[in-house]
Image (cartoon, rainbow, N blue to C red; front, top):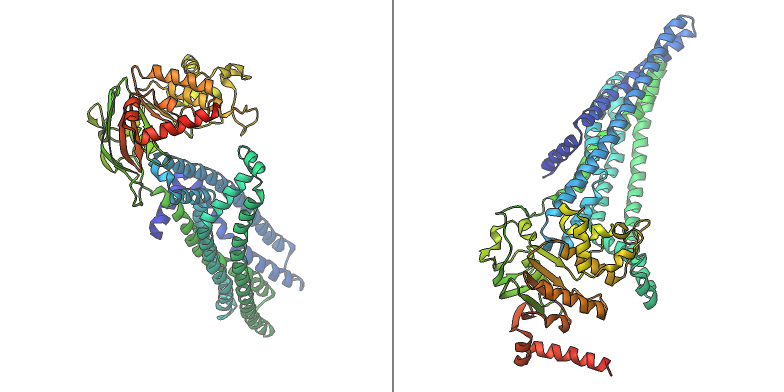
Length: 591
């Protein structure tokens, strides 16, 4: 799995920008040979200075070595500049490409997966890794190769100082690397465990800072409760962090102590050889400067290996999201006609990875020019039927027929073109009023007459009073946006439904946010829509439901009653009970 993830990560990096990938790798490897060259030139220069004290070296000789050292410094600066620029541009291209892949993947996921908390966790983790992890893997792999080059070349120079010097310096580098590796993995595991709790904490923070929820939060005075929960999560994170830092500090101190002892032994060996005249002043400077280089490169080499491993652990989060089963919305035959009949045949549905059926044995038929209403308590399965009809969900049993043909034969996207809907939790898009309507059919985004007709049919005349009419930005998210009331947003959602020339119209609580006058106007408009289309209604208001040609009453995901308003009242069952209960409430309000 790790090898496959590594291969896929490198492929991501290369595809993001081949030119910058090559430039970054090439300049990094070239720069890896400079430390050894600088050490050797410094050694020669110090030895020459020592001999110059006795008058055996000319100024020209010293100047030549100095010029060579300066040239190496300039070359290093050039390589570093090009390397950093290539890495920055590569990182930007990589972040864009992976963000696009995540968004493409999210666009193709089945809608039922979005109602699963585990999917949200994977999406959150995937987005968290976009910024640095893929580039981190590539950077560390190039760094590994560079560290190997530097370590080999510097090690070859230090090996000349004595047989035991280089091994001791190498051993002194290991304890710190081990500590870093061990606690790097622990940090990853801690973040992994905290993903869900961190999402809850972020949600609590968003509730406390929400412009739409501040009224309820302030009125009911539950800020202390939210703050308390938010702090409880923080304290839980803090306890885990303190435990890791405490243990990491202890092991880090022990590692530093062992490393200092080993470096002390190596230094004693060098001083012993110096006392016997076996090494020069330049050799000693090579040892002193080489310690830092060797320790740094051993650290880079070993921490690079563990860093690649750790980054691949984080990259697995991204790949787990990208490997989620996707739904090809264009797979299947293309639906090319208007929908004249919709038939559910013994349809059942349950969410993935669950054991409870949301719908069981649902059967009904609705024809062009008819309106069908779905009635039932919350959770009865009404919205699930809508999602199945519009292709957002796929039945787990039974069939849905359109014009007598199995809908499963056709691509979801082609069927969706014949469906237009307003959901109870309709979208409030922080865009212009025109876009809020025309998003129903983006190919007609600039169809101003069509937008105006849809606005008129939805009774959204308030649009004319906005500062820039249909071009007025809406919402509070961006500067210059105009916030609307709930009823006004719902009017625009209705206009969005009308804008698409669909043969099936679905109204999920279409009057929930409207006042009495607006509700009456909307119902009259709905009556007009039933003449040449199929209309599906979900509503708790019987003033809306009773206009339907047939009414289905759902309970626990099953159809328990079906018929017209008059027939169901005569049946004196669940529908009649619900109707009388609501009618009694209206009567009491009128007293």
